[in-house]
Amino acid sequence: MRPICPLCMTSASVGFQCPDCVGAGAAQQRQPVTPVGAPIKEKPTVTYVLIAVNVAIFGLAWMSGLDEAIGNWGMWPAGIAQGEWWRLFTSAFLHGGFLHILFNMYILFIVGAPLERLMGHLRFGVLYVAAAFGGAVASYAFNPVNTLSVGASGAIFGLMGAFAVAGFKMRYDIKQILFLVGFNLVLGFVLAGTDWKAHVGGLITGVLVAAVFFYAPRNKRTVVQVLGVLVVLGILVGITMWRTSELLALPVY
Image (cartoon, rainbow, N blue to C red; front, side, top):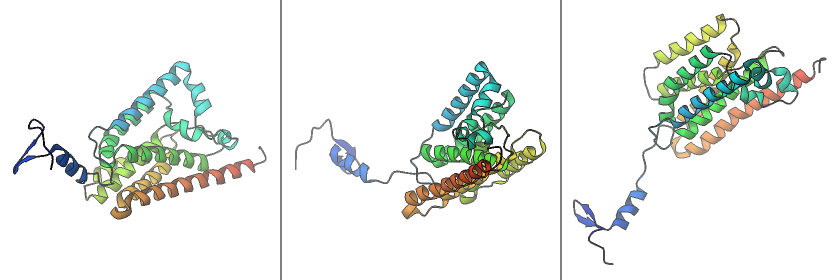
């Protein structure tokens, strides 16, 4: 037993408690988490950062010459096959015009913010990057060699697919998000100049990553989530390597 300063004592229903004991007890209490096991965060910081980064890059590209920026950093199979692998990532942060970025950032805000609250900052960020990569890989693998493609649409479709997975797992009404996905897929098929292959690739990747996050068993949640994401990324890397070897085998190379 030790003396306690009267000013430091914590009031409780049973009298007063030692502040050190109160702190130790609070540390042992299980903190609330999201459905995927992440700490609960109300502010969708990653969503805001992604919007800011996309807008900033678009502004810089516009000022320096949009066509040149797209040519240097867009998804271009011929360049990627020759070692310019960064195009698989940089292409997701470039946009072809004001309407292009406006639409993508609007969907990112209305879908990304609530999804980030469900998933937490880290897992949401992993989902976004993985879906962006998946969209770029699909575009690289299944488009003609001289295709030039840019946009965050692969990542956006991945978020919409993940939102549907989350809603299904939590027994929400997902008809609206399914309609949004279907409507935008149809637009991608019918509008000229739209890289629908990136849309489909991002959507599939987002669904797979979200399924790993939301359906991982609680007692081994983190391990299963990490391994699951690595498997998805490994598949995407494998597809990239296959496409690269295919292109390098062409006579033009």
